[in-house]
Amino acid sequence: MARIAFWYEFASTYSYLSAMRIEEMAREAGVAVDWRPFLLGPIFAAQGWTTSPFNLYEAKGRNMWRDMERLTAARGLGLRRPDPFPQNGLYAARLALIGADEGWGPAFTRAVYRAEFAEGADISDKAVLAAALRSVGLDADALLARIAEPEVKDRLKAQTGEAQARGVFGAPSFFVGDELYWGDDRLEQALAHARASD
Amino acid sequence: MARIAFWYEFASTYSYLSAMRIEEMAREAGVAVDWRPFLLGPIFAAQGWTTSPFNLYEAKGRNMWRDMERLTAARGLGLRRPDPFPQNGLYAARLALIGADEGWGPAFTRAVYRAEFAEGADISDKAVLAAALRSVGLDADALLARIAEPEVKDRLKAQTGEAQARGVFGAPSFFVGDELYWGDDRLEQALAHARASD
Image (cartoon, rainbow over all chains, first blue to last red; front, side):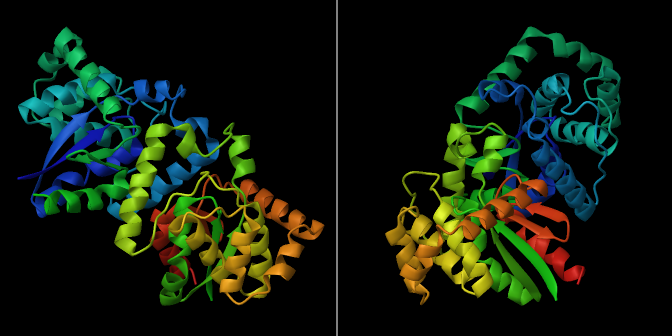
C-alpha cells in the first residue's frame, strides 16, 4: 500500500489543519499514513530562533492568524488562540509517540489539537492531556505515568533528530519516500505523489 | 469592477509563479488586476535579514527550489536558477512601475520573470532588461534612460514604503481592499474574495 509520513508538531497551527483532514483524504486516495510527532524547538534553535517565527516576525504572525481564521472557517473547524503561543507540546508529543505504536495516536492527536486550537486550552497542562486521553477511551493516569520514562523521552529525541537529519525545517511536513513536502498547502500534492508511486 | 492588487518583487520565485497566471485567472473571475512592483530588500532588512530567507535557512531554501521544480513542471513553466540568487531587481522594478502607468507593465513583467527564472539570466544587466523591453515592442533605450530619473526612483521608494506600511512581509502578496493574502498558494482564495465583494 502507498504510504505518506505526516510529521507534526503540537504547537503548530498548520499541523492542526492537516491533522484534522489527512486521515479522510488519505483513505480516499488509498494511502496509509504514518503519524510522526516531533519537536520543532530544537530545529528552530539550530536556526537561531528562540520562539516561533510567527512571534519573531510580527507582520508574518498577524497574517498567519488571519489566514488561520479564513481556513478554519472554510473547513468548519474552530479557532481560539491559545495563551501562550506557541504552546509547549513536549508531553503531548511523548504521548502521541506511544499512541502511534498502540493505534490510538491519530484520535488522541486530533483531541489535543481540538483542545489547543479550537478551545484555546493549555496543552502543557496534564489535566488537559488527561481529558484528551479519556475522550478517546484511554486510561489517562497509566499513560501520563509513562511520559517520564527514559525510553519514551529518548524516542522523542531520536524522532526529532531524524526529522532534522532528513531536512525538516517546519511543520507539518510530509514525506513520500525521500521526497519532502512542506506545509498543509502541499498535502494534496504529497498524497497524489504517494498514490502515483504505489 | 472587482479589483485585486498584486504586489510582487522581481527576485521572488513565487512571484514568478503568480505573474505567469494571474492575468488569465483574473479575467476568468471578472477581476481587474493592479500590478504593484516593490522591493523586499528594505522590508527584509527591517526584520534583520541581509539576504533572502531561502539563503539564510538552508533546508528551507533547498525545499523552495524543489517545490519550484514540482510547481513549474506541473504548470508548464521553465525553471533555471539564476546566479546570484536573489537577483537585484531594482532597475526592473523601476521600469515595471513606469509600465504599470503606460499599459505594458504586465507583459514586461512576465518577460523579465521568464528571462530570470526560465532562462537564468541576470536581470540587473541592462542588456537583459533591454531585450525584455524590446520583446514586448518597446523603445528600450528611451525607457532605460528613465530609470535614473529622481521621480521614478522616488516612486519606487514610496511604493515599497506603502507595502511595508500595509503589513507586506513577503511576495507575492495580494490585497482585496485591506485584506492581505500572502503567497502564490492564496491567489485562488484572494480572487474568490475579490469576486464576492464586487
